[in-house]
View 1: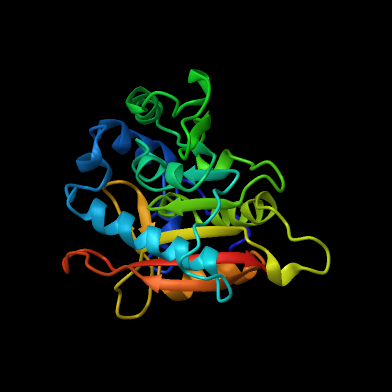
View 2: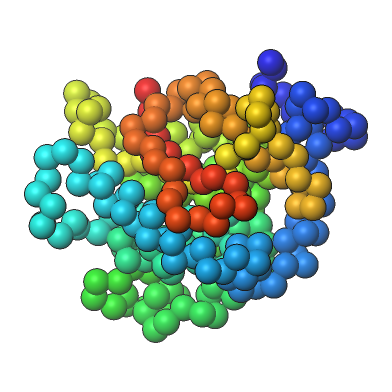
Length: 264
C-alpha cells in the first residue's frame, strides 16, 4: 500500500483506503460547531475524562520511572512538552501542567484555545508572569493543524497526541510522526538507551473484524487499527517502548490504546 502520497481530495469513498475520504474543511466545520467544553471535546461522554486522565497519568509516571527509579522518589518536572490537538486544554490542565514546566498547545480551532487561555489560573500562562511553585505554564499557543505544524528540533520531552490523529491521512500522519521524532530531545551520543523523551499517541482503535480502518462521516476522520498504527510507527522510524489499553471506558465506545514511542 502506497502511503507516501495523499489520495485525491475528490476521491469517492474507498473501503480499502478510508483515509482517502478525509476532508480538512469538513473536519474544521464539525469542530467549530462543537461546544467549547468537556462534553463537546468528548462527544457527549464527559464522565470519561477523569478515567482517561488517571490512566494517562499512571502510564506517564511508569514510563518516566522506568525500571530503576525508586517509586517513592518524586519525579522532577519535565522541561517542555507539547499537547497536540489540545482542544480546550483538557489534558494540558488535567495532566501536563502538573508534570512539566512549560506546555505548548497545538490546536487548529481558535475558539478552543481562546477558552483554554481564559480558563487558566493566575501564573498558568507565560503572558501572566512568573509561574506558581510546583505548577507549569502554557507557553506557545499554536493555531495550526498537525499537518502544518513543524516542531522545533530537539525541543520536547514529550509530544502528546490524543484523539486527533484520525484527521490526518496516512501520508500526512507518516510525515507528522517523522517530524515528532525530530522534535523530541535526543539522547547524548552513546546513551541512546537512557533517553527520557517520547512521542505519545493515545487513540481509539478500529473494531472492524478484518482490522480495517473505519471512516466517520460526521467529523471526517478515520479510526485506525492497532496493526495500522504499528505499521506507520515503524515506517516513521519509531519503536514502541510501552503500550497499554485504557481501562474503564464505556463498552459502547471504541477501545483506546496508548503508545510511547522513541526513535529506532
